[in-house]
Length: 512
Image (tube, rainbow, N blue to C red; front, top):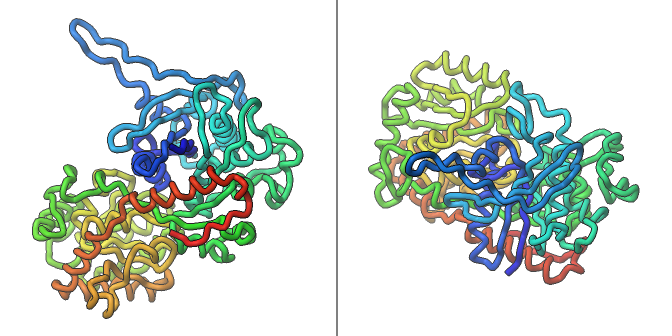
């Protein structure tokens, strides 16, 4: 049994701002069948501690006080204040060991995990996530009595310093363990001025090109990519794309230098949470064999969003409303979409200017375009169940999960040909349709002309109901559960645990 510590800034079902949380929360359960015991370590945000400390339990007479979570370690001073390591459990379908870094001076704040109520990043995010990384390195390195791990798996820039701490400043009395760094989105790197370096607790030799230094400052993600034994991204195509200047975001040279130590493993989805035959949040359950029942969900979604009821295609968008996600081009094609007889239901939050432009589009097309600004997990399920097609016009997409949910629910993905979108959606060209392999629509280039053409192709296919039904069924037959991806991660862990000499030069060819 290999013991792995998964270090991240969020995990479902406790705290989520994006797909990172889904991956971190689902992987422990999925990988257990492959000989890996995984513990997840996340910060003790208020919403996490609330779930970790259950309310008082009512008994006869008066309420009994719920047991406090066990404290397994304490730091007297962790970047400016005391901290405790609490032990708990990821619940529901996400069973697995949970470790929570309870550091009130760093994490006990209103707002999101990364920003205040107005959306501005916390000024001391460098300190908050350096503390998470330092604590994670201590735990993975064996400095906490009663906890022992064979490998550290760090996710994104918020955990990026952990491999660097293991390399340059391992815990006293600990032991050397290998580390894996996963890039969920290269665009977010955690770059800070050089004056924070003396406060990180790293030795002078860490201030180097092969350490944490990056363009005269400190690069958290860069530090992890330099220091980790191996690097993964969340799709094979993205693993190739980030070797180029277009997608590498300035780190393409480093990625190229790591050679075969960089590989792509496509994300999975939780097949229990996202199963239309069992989903209690939708109006009518259905399956690939009983697609006729699906129409009740479309009618319910039309009513919920105040859209006209007709037999034309109902498109959905569930997304962050940002330039990366192509939402500026979505604003441009709204008139075209409606002109083809389509309607749009959108759920998301993001850039204020894009939100305003989308509201103007909805006002222009009352009954045809409707928005819900924010995020609601249950509503996302209802949209996947009721929409005919989901639009994903991302300029770059490391993996993407919404198109996978769409495939599972018979909501045909219309996607840009990039990253994980290209890896997971088979374009409905004539040959693929005849072979019964087509699962969606791909378009090349995120601009008005290409996106409008993708929507037009989707509408044309929708009007051929037999072909459209077969595309839906082909998507629903696809297996995007965590089984295959978990096996790939387990094999990767085993390579580094059993052959630690592979550090910095492993030959792990063959992307998953």
